[in-house]
Amino acid sequence: GNKDNKQLEWNQAANCAVGNGELTMTARRQQTTSSSGEKYDWTSCLISSTPAYGFQFGYIEERAILPEQRGFWPAFWTWQAPHEDRYIETDVYEFYSQDRRRLDLTQHSGGQGNCKPTLSFDPADDWHTYGAAIEPSGTTWYVDGVQVCHTPAWL
Image 1: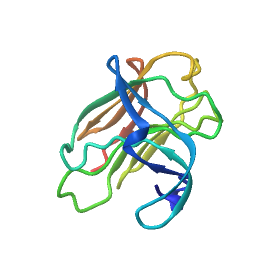
Image 2: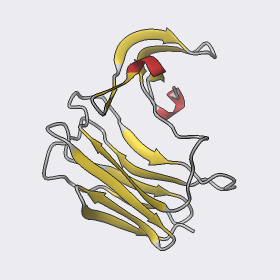
Image 3: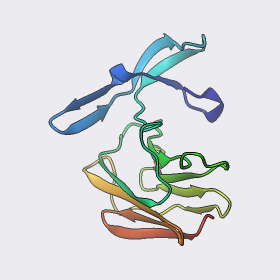
């Protein structure tokens, strides 16, 4: 959980389930107290590869059905490569479910760039693929294999 970032949930493994080759991440209106004593009214799920896997450049993607209910903020992002001494984060997407046709795609770093493409579909209606190619020359974002944004190098 991170209330300073307007996150209202405490993430816990019990809200993550895998079945039939699909990961289901469930948000529940459920009161809980974090290990630091902070109280939350929601629980949810967070998947992280840290510290087991890190990379500086590459292509990553996710195939997902995003939530239709208002008030959700699913996101797919990276953090800086191991041993990097500056803040680097790539948001493959952030989706604010109250604005159902827009994604926020951001490269948070020295040469920060951001795009907010308007989608021709509702991400809650069906499976769609969201990806980003993070390269020395810049970051390129894709939705269903089609380029939707490019920002220059972040080095």
